[in-house]
Image (tube, rainbow, N blue to C red):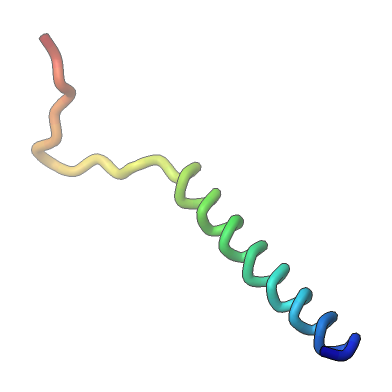
Amino acid sequence: MNGSALAMMLVADVVVTVFTVYFFWKVLRTPGTKHEGDFMPGP
């Protein structure tokens, strides 16, 4: 594998990883929506 192919592969891997982490973090930080009929569990 020559140098330009290795660089392109690394750039593609980094871009995909950054997008994956960004959207995963966004999903984790987004609060859930409350639906009608939901109730808080209690004693």
